[in-house]
Image 1 (cartoon, one colour):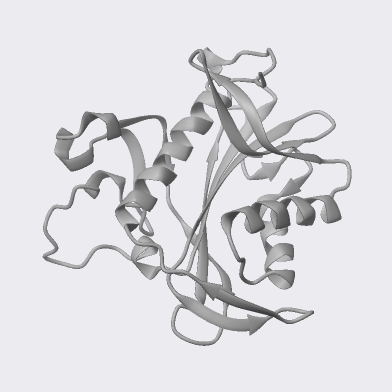
Image 2: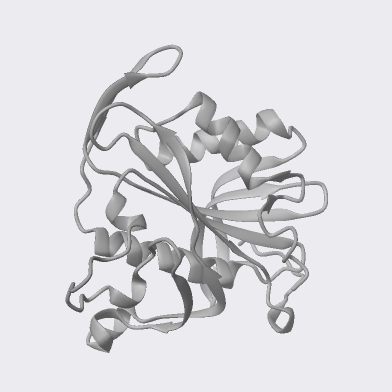
Length: 229
């Protein structure tokens, strides 16, 4: 795959790791997913001003219009990015200037997993241009997402959608063993999962990690035409 070596490069200009490191130094936590998206775009511009960022960009996929969280456009390549920000309760004051944060506890970690996997599938549909790669990014302080399920834990409806450290997402994933077909998700590629540290703040729920999955165009499906509506 042409994008394999540069799959974690944003718009062919800078590595995702460099953007995340810069972002983490200035914004160790976010008020919301929209705050994360905007802050990521700003960090990217600060590091690489020749990359243009566009939020909520319509995309053509299967005859219907969907919206992409962030499209990063470089001089010769582009990157489509989907974000997920799933939090447990945390309150604190951090940053310069200091800001007060009061994160809500999001229920239903199983749905967080489902929606993240769906983001990967969406990026597989969006990344049909030979000059476009994709990144699905999850940032969370909920350890249940990155920790493997405990020994003896029974079968859960989101078993196929687990995104813990060391897992690989591949093939057709069934929700509740196929009992609810609308949630079935089929992936074109194989995606090994590797969580990375993001920030460490005081108090319970102060550890944040991120997961990034890179998606490249499939050679047999590449369409060099515009991907926006």
